[in-house]
Image (tube, rainbow, N blue to C red):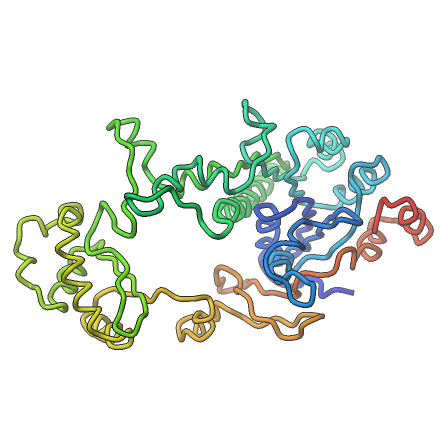
Length: 401
């Protein structure tokens, strides 16, 4: 028996997570973090591809432990009529279904929104795809890498004289997962007003296009495509990473003029503050070589601790470029409990990122790490009326696992 949610703002909500890899599962994870009863539906023998992503320990994916936390796991083959029938029974008890199959796949299995909502008019169906349910690209296979490229992110990332650069992690999927949780919350709010659910069409491209910024407007209104600037910004300077005398890297940003003035006073060049071009961040960006030289020389002669202490005393903004291991010991991360310890059935105490925001009255929490494939099949399916005999029959047929 799993630790069923009894607290959090979404207590009483049931979510079926029939999605794979990252964006959909992350949306469901967030809902589970805040109290939803999330049921992870996987293929009975193959499981979710996330089980093979990232580094493993003793043959178990560590990423899976986080992305599937707070979820009960069942094995169910949706492509068979019997499996689809069981899924419809589950959907009758659910508030939200999350899926990320190619457009038309759920309909082929008899699991489209028209079918599911006929028996459950309040159901919300979150559909996550690379390019959306319609349009000429709808049937294309898509991964985060492709939309990171198409969105303008890769075009803007990297050194000016270097190639476009892709992130080393699932950026587009992660942004879409967070957006998906927000979209479900909006649909739930609307359901409170009229009692009806709805279908949500979430493509991976839209959220990261928004995150990239106003480039589309610049192209439309000014005929300008932004170019790569490395760690510099077209909007302010000094803004870069700088190496300390003990080999660490620090990041500085001076979006506010007052911060820029404090930085230049600190590094011993107050004379530039009176220059006409110092008045705005965009004008300062035109003199980045000069300003980076002043800041880089000063930082390069001092240790990381010395630089951070001096910046804090001057009221200027600076942050270390951390390795993940350094987050584990950072005093701010520790004070705010941004990383927490969760008990895992296999590995015991395990540290991972905590829930993403802190709510005063109904805080979220992590009740369990990602569970074994099919660990909760019997428990979950018995809740929708399948007796031991029928479960055994479906297991022999390979429909459930």
